[in-house]
Every structure is written in structure tokens, then in C-alpha cells.
Image (cartoon, rainbow, N blue to C red; front, side, top):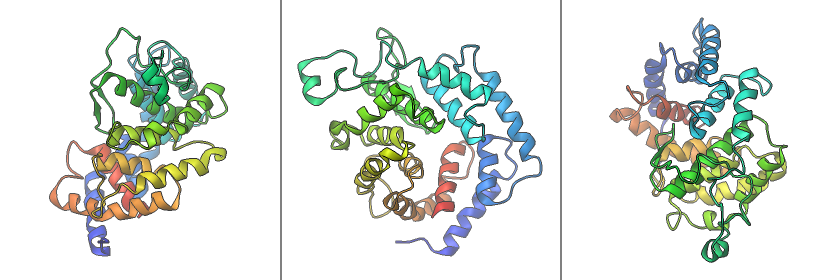
Length: 296
């Protein structure tokens, strides 16, 4: 059932109240979506970029973590830092150096993995989150997803890093294209929603290819349509975190993805009414929800 104008207006009003005075990246971006920028938001934006630069190490990483460094890059891009910004270049350089390194998902080969296309003969360009002997799981992501299986955590981390470097316009690099092509061709994932791949892992894969260059857009949109069909009538997602699904769908400018975002608006309005969104501790989720309200 579609949300009425009153329900959407009430949800937006709650969002406006929640984000009005927040001196954070989410607060700044939310005010842009709401059309109520604060007078000092440009100063805040500059301050936030400086903070992100200070958060990175001399080598360009954030705490030596693939996921945290990819998130720093995404934050810089959201704050309108161009691809040639000094901080962006440094962070991108560290991320790209993690490609094809020991510890990446798909390293090595067994008969069973080869038959499924899940070995190094099929998966090129993946990012390594850690050495093979180190444990990365359980691995937390900024969207609020925790991946507990070791192999799945390495897969999700690589997809997240790919999403970041593509967002930073690194699509001409061969290893980035190799990773992109390997994901698009990984039929084991796209046909495996719920078994053997969890829905959120499929969404990590779709997020990884969301910013693919134009030559790949038709394939990405077909996959987005396939995933969109998993949406429930109430706008939530079968087995997946609904705001993870929305975050990915908002990144893909196709008609089915946009329709999926609109279909989720009633669910968002209900969460706004019951206090699940636009309350303390929900900044990232609330920002995604607001983006959906603005797009829907």
C-alpha cells in the first residue's frame, strides 16, 4: 500500500527535527536532502573533510582496515571531495594496493570451488582485508551489518572496497575492471539469494557493481531487477536488512530500483512513527531512510 502525502510529510518532519542541529556528515547531508541547509554547513563540510584526513594514517589507511578505509573514501566523496583531492588520492592508493594480495576471497583452488567459479581462476582483482592467517570475522560494516563467517566477511569487504573505488572514479584501472567483471559473472551469487548466499551478501555484491561505468550498466540493471523482485509487498526484503537493500537500490538509477525505493516508503513511514528511525543511535539508517523519502 502506498504511503499518503500526510504520512510522508510527517516522516520528513521527524527527519528535519532529528537532523536539524547535527554537526555531522549525516546531519549535513540530511539537511541538503530536506532543502534546509544551515548557514554554517559549508564550514562544517570543510571541517569534516579535515577530520577525515586526520583520521587516516600516513599510508592512507584508516586503522589499517579495508572496510574502515573504504568507508573513509565514501565519506570523502559524499562531502564532495573530487577524485584528485589529496586525501582521496592517498586513500585510494592504499585501497588499490590491497588488490590481488594474499588473503583475498577466492585465493587458491579446490575441485568444489572451481566447479562453482569461486577460486582464483575466476575471481581476479579482489581486495584482501587481511593476511590468510589473520581472522577478520565477525566484521562490522557502517550500515549496521555484521558478517560472521570468515570467507563471507572477506567477500563482503572486497565488494565494499570495490564500491568505494568505483565511486571515486577508478573504473579505468585493470584490476578494478577485473573485480567488476568477476562479480558480474559470478552466477553462484546472483542465483543464490538465501541459499547458499545470504541476502545481505548478495546486496554487498550488487553494491560493489552499483557504480560500474556505462559499458556495464545494462548488466547491473538486470541484476538490480532480479534483486528487486525479492522485495515483499510491505516494502521490506526477504531475509535482508531493509535499509541495506535501500542503500544499494538508491545507488542504481534504473526504473526497477527506483520502483523498489518507492515501494519501501510506507515501511519507512511506519518506522518513523514507531520510533525506530530518526532517534538517537540511528544516524546512518535514518539518512538512508531520508534519501528514500526524498527519492520516492
